[in-house]
Length: 223
Image (cartoon, rainbow, N blue to C red; front, side, top):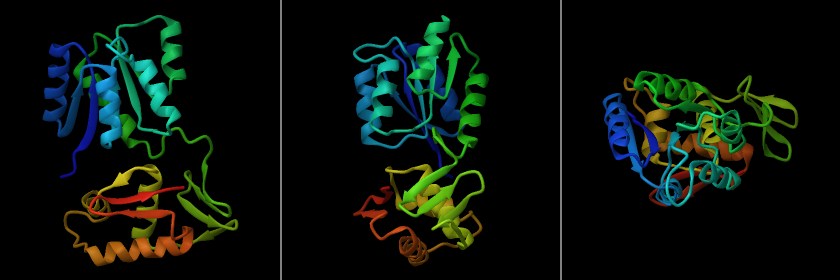
C-alpha cells in the first residue's frame, strides 16, 4: 500500500515524536526536521504530499521557508502548526502560501482530519480552472477534460488518469512504482509495457518533450 509522505518541521522534539508516531500509526511516512534549513534540504531532495510547518524554528522560520519554496514553484500543500494566534500572523501565513493553519495546542485527530481533507483536493494553488500545457493545449481541472485547439480530446481511462496525476505533480519526478500503484488497483495486473504505451500516447498529444524520462528514477512532466 502506498504511504503518503509528510514533512514535519517542529523543533520541539517531544511534540515532533508524538506527531510522528501518531501519523505513522495511520499509515503515513513522516520525515522529521528540526530547523528551517534542514527542512528546506529535505524538500529539495525528495517529494512530499503534505508539509507540516512550525513557524518559530531555528535558521529559517516556517513563513520564510514556505515563501521561498513557493517562489521556486513548489506547490506541495502546507499546514502551519503554530502557537502564534494574532490575526496578522494568520494573514502572514496565508500570504506565504499555506493551505491551512492549525493553532497549538491541537488534537492529533484534528490534525489528521486537516491532512486527509487536503489530500482529497486534486489541484493545489491553481490560479484558474484551465491549466495550460502548451500553446493550444489546456486541461480543465473542473471537468478533467483535455482540450487541443479548444476541442475536447477523448483519452482512454488510464491515459486520462495518468495525465491528471502528472499535472497534480507537475515538475516532480514520479517514480515508476508510484505510477504503477496509482494506475492499477490491487486486483488489476499492470505492466511496464502498458505504462510506456500510455506515456507514448500522451506524448503524441501534449508533446514529446512534455514528459521526460529520468533514468532509474521515473518520469517528470515539464510544462
